[in-house]
Image 1 (cartoon, rainbow, N blue to C red):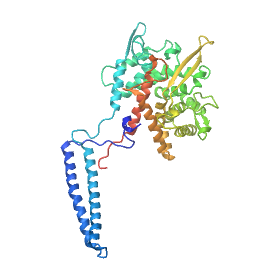
Image 2: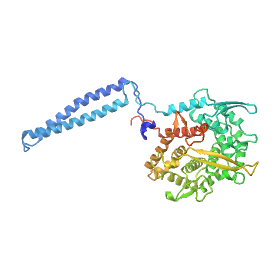
Image 3: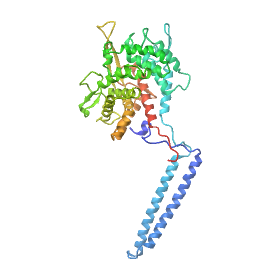
Image 4: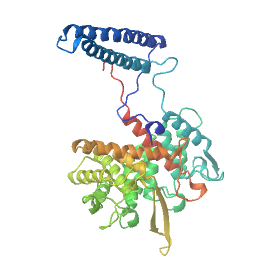
Length: 459
């Protein structure tokens, strides 16, 4: 897929600023064109005259001298004309008549279209017990009776915080109020399929969104305490063994409670849960579970672990074991043997189940179906400070850029007007999950910021 099709400039390309006056840009082009035509003739004639005077008479007569001098003169004139043409072309590029020199890319339109869709799909429900609920259900395009959910509204709030709120159609204050109203009677939050028992991964997701929106640390403290107290091997063994759940809780608590005593233990669990992959030089990586010694290496879960460990290092400080393990995770991602890297196996979207025993009926299980936008996670992992440092220090920058560009291309290809679609056939009402749109927008926005290089005057 070409750079133009992707709507992205090649890496390292800096946009050229438009000139203040279009005529001012055209005048140098006219002058260069005139100078190129006249200068080429003058340069060619000068070389001809010089060679004709200095060539020895021992050549085969005067015609030979004319031929050599003439060919040299024509060649010099042509080179001068081509040089002038190149300068003239660059001048025209800087200020083409009637058009700006650097047209905006498609990303602002994608962001605007996503915002319009979210505003149109906003769900409002006047709950008799909880009050007005304003937010989104799990997926865009669900039936009109779909009520706002904690998961959908939390991801929608994250999107608003990333994109900003350009007008009054959406209010982050309403979304924050709705998330507090959706809190379960005994505290915490759960997904729609999990019933009335709070779950740490959903609670951490909501707490992270509320913290980003400016909720007071004091109000969050009680919910943080409930979340951390219930997230133990004794009370939630399935959750503590899940790479997805542990990394989600870690990321959420880093936002809502960066001083939580649970955070170092979660980081240690992720580090200890890495496995060695003999297929990629025995580099450490991750599977969907943290307790498997011989698991199956997963690019999705490796990317999630790298992102979580990298964020933890910034907040908690680093240690040798965590640093070495996440560095191996980066090397494992860079060692992908498949290609092309915008459609390789490492970018395949995944589904998994988190099965928990129900506390009200131990003979039955609660099943949470989780879907993963793999390419977006790989983009975030490869843009982490750890990945950039490894690529530079170990001479892997070309490989790093190739993998990153491929993952960004895959993310871009999955959207239409700023909304991402799940293509693996989970039913028509769940094909546009709001979490997927959040992850896609987040990856593209982060990549655009990463690639931005302002022009330096005088260079």
